[in-house]
Length: 354
Ligand SMILES: *Cc1c(COP(=O)(O)O)cnc(C)c1O
Image (tube, rainbow, N blue to C red; front, side, top):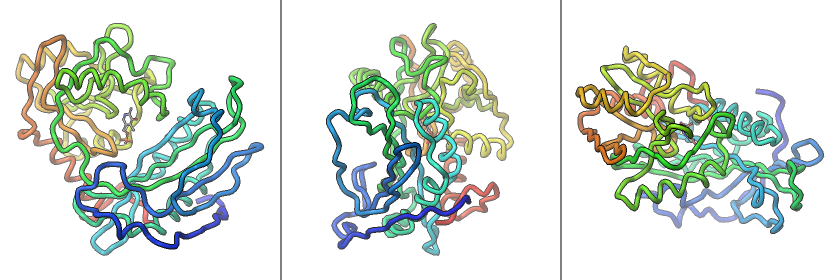
């Protein structure tokens, strides 16, 4: 840890926790008692504060609303059965956050604000971590440009915040996926590898159109041929073909490097399964499917951890899978959850104590 930062703490007078039923909580709907807020001005971060969760007062000319310099992260905190609070791989999210910041021409956030601030905030709101299987406290750090100015240029001022939301299981049901042929999420040279708000904005219509046809999400493809596979919705995608795990590589900058993705790769290797990070196109998947060799298809991400796919539709050709038989991804999911909940040895040092 680098030098400590002074964080001004103002506590709420009354916790909202007593008003909320932590059973069956919808994802991202309830927020804990406190938030962290910091301002970037004149080349430095200042006013680092933890205070009661509250609305922001913003100018209508706020640069982020017009020109979209806005990035975020998603991290989870867990409670073990002794009541200790732990955060899963926050350093990886910290590094990725600053990669996103650089790509979006925004200032980096120092570790002592991102990590130390997060730990202090989670410690203060530790009662908001549900101590239940598949439950956690979702941590949302984010930053946006805050100049009140319509001139097109990188903003000179920014706000960094962290908010916390208790959460239960995310996508419970296996997904039906449409292979996207029209829209593009990311192209080489673009911003696909960064976790910026616009990537999400640009993806919504494709998902909505897939839903109209009875599908849950799309499988993103490359911008020219619409054949090379990228990600499933806002998750990284894995195929188990012939007992080999295949996931698209990161070389072109069109894939967001998921922390779950990298954890799943470790888990697969521990299981003795070969992992190939490489280009994969839909024709290869179709050929393997016809040969009966596609055992599993799933997405990975912090919110859902692992989301099984039960159908892929490419130009009307439907490939059906049976997630009840997904031995590998089920094993990986419980292995990861056991590490997170303190039931399995954390040999990679992924859990950071609050
Ligand atoms: C956040 C995100 C992921 C998953 O990353 P994790 O670190 O595993 O949560 C995958 N794809 C996209 C596009 C994302 O925004």
